[in-house]
Length: 276
Image (cartoon, rainbow, N blue to C red):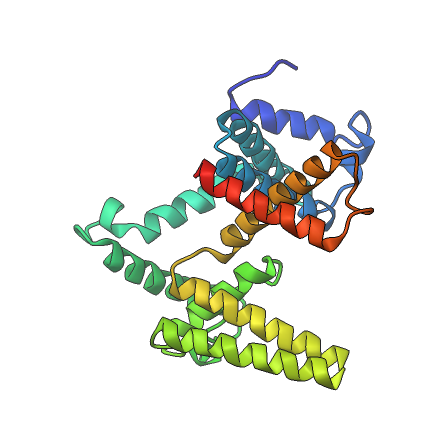
């Protein structure tokens, strides 16, 4: 098969890979559950390419992510559930339904009005989805404010989503100062558990501290996942600088003192500031 810009060709390639007789043994043995880690990984690869400003890589990573959608859709088609066309139909219907100000008669709206409308439409969709499951009347009362946040999300992102949903019903701090005070409170509680020596309780308090830090990011309108990825990249660069400078001296990190490495860490930070 030759490369093509036609989505049909990609669908045909996946069908060939999944053919039980002539297909690829690895592809044939995969299930929805087994390729979930790859689906998540590809989404992160897309985010990484965007953050690096790597346009060529972004094209390739978007293709890898699209392949995951095709893969899931093919397995669903084989099971008689739905096909790729059904996936496209579902998302196009959802986009039209959720944008009456563009495709309907809702008229011109501000960004805040659109966001509020989106929330109302999603809530209605949730009620309809639960009704289709046959739960019956009284469904709206059973649906909690925190429903719909996937368990498989990265912990920081899930914490953010939970906090956003709680905030929509009024369970939120009024200002950033209150969030900072909560973080200080959590630090004190971590210190207390360190003194007590309970590993399980300490893990719980560290979790509370991280949750509070996510809340601070939310109030400051900072994406915690992106912020942490940035911090990771910064740490990698600074530590790489330490290793490079030590190698120039004929040393390694393992055979250097913490004071030596700390001095080079400060040097790396100063170099960062000059680059900015």
